[in-house]
Image (cartoon, rainbow, N blue to C red; front, side, top):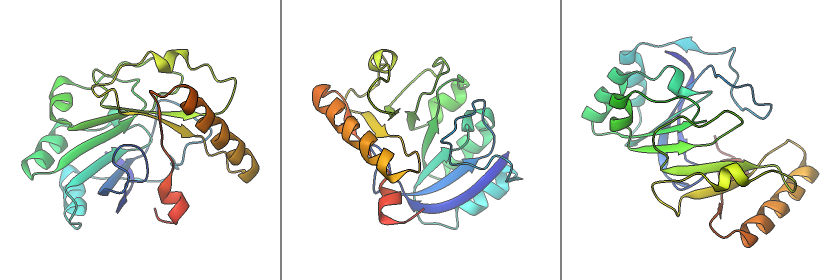
Length: 195
């Protein structure tokens, strides 16, 4: 599996905000989003044993597979072996690729952050949608079902422009106030200056 990085930090977004977690960031994606924070050119190939060895350097039980798009490479063997070690397995995906039944049955939490591609993943525990501001068509996002109706997060898109970010945040807050089935997700790791 080609891995961009493995690191230990706190989850900064969505339902699990503040939770210590080991992040396994896969390199490579089936989409090309302008705001992606993964350098897909970097990374190296890891064996299952090497990934497990890196994860075991940290005390956290919570493991987050992210990317890029982790569903392109995540193996059933890695998932089963980490589960056997008592790890809580969480995947962050764009949802455009269906998981094998074996992997889906062994993933404890699935966060879907949909982009433009159709959603094919079988289960969504948490929906985390990026909001770009007024004018964004929310009809498709509003119709997505989650296993927990309280786990629908709208996150202002960071466009690396403080003035634009402020506008998007204000518009995100207003949208949520008018559509209270959504909750606000902020990138708290960026706000407090951690990875």
